[in-house]
Amino acid sequence: MTSRTSQLVPSEPRRVVVAGDWHGNTPWAQKVIRQAATALAAEDRRIIVQLGDFGIWPGRAGRNYLSQLDATLAATTSELWFVDGNHEDFRQLARLRPGPDGREQVAGRIWHLPRGYRWTWHGRTWLALGGGVSLDKAGRTKGRNWWPQEEITDDQERAVIAGGHAEVMATHECPAGVTHTFPPPPSWWDPRDLARNDAHRERLQRVVDAVRPAHLMHGHLHIGYQRECDFGYGPVEVTGLDMDGSNANYAMLDVEAMEWSQA
Image (cartoon, rainbow, N blue to C red; front, side):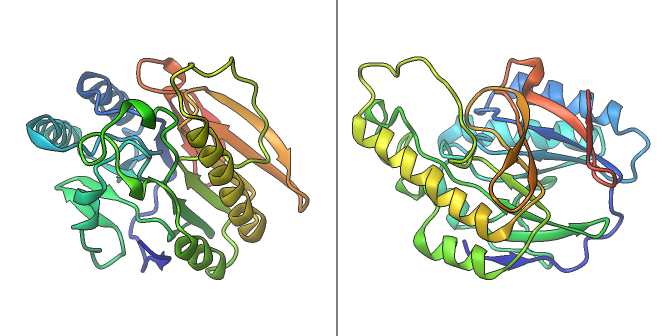
C-alpha cells in the first residue's frame, strides 16, 4: 500500500454519500446503501465513500457479508469505495491488485482505496488514507480478529507526504490536532495500545500538516460531529461519522460545493 494517483475517473458525481464504520453489519450496511441510492437518484454514478472498519473479515461470515452487499449495490445501481480501518482482515487486502485507475476491486461493485490513493473530483484532489489502532487489542487474537497491518507505516507516511497537497482527505483515524473528551477507558485495555493510538494520531497529524487539506472526514471514534480546526495553515473542516446503528453514521456530500446535508 503506497501512494498512488488515479487516472481520470469518468462521470464525476455531483453528490456522494459518506459513511462511517459498519463493522460488517449486513442489515445496517444494506439500509444505508438503499437510502443512499434514493438520495442519489439523480446521479449517473451512485457512489458511497465508506471511512473504514468496513467489514473485510475472514471465513464464511466475511464472504456472505461481501456477497450480500454486492447484490444490494447491484440492485440499486450503486458502487462502494472504502478506506481500510483497523478492524479488517489485512491478509485479504494484501492479495488485491490495483485496477486501471488504482482502486482495488473486492467484489463487483466494492472497491478498496489503498493508503495514498488519490483522485480528482471537480478540480479537487482527494486523498484516501486508511488505518488506525485497535484500542481493544488485548481482547483480540492475532490472525483471527486482529492484524498488525492496521497502522500507517513509516513508508506509507513518507510516500503520502511526497505526493504533495490534496484538498480533501478521507481517513479512518482522526488526527491528533482535533481534541476530544472521552470517559476513562475500560480497565482491560492495555496502556501500550493507548500509547500506540496516541502515536498513530500524531503520525496522521504529520501527514495532514504536510498535505494541508481544507476538508478531512473520518470514522473510528464512533461519534458524529463537524468542527473547523486550525492546524497552522488555515481553516480545516473536520467531519466525523458515527458507527453503524446511528443516524449520524452517514450523510450526503455535495462534492462540487463541498457542502453536507442529510441523506
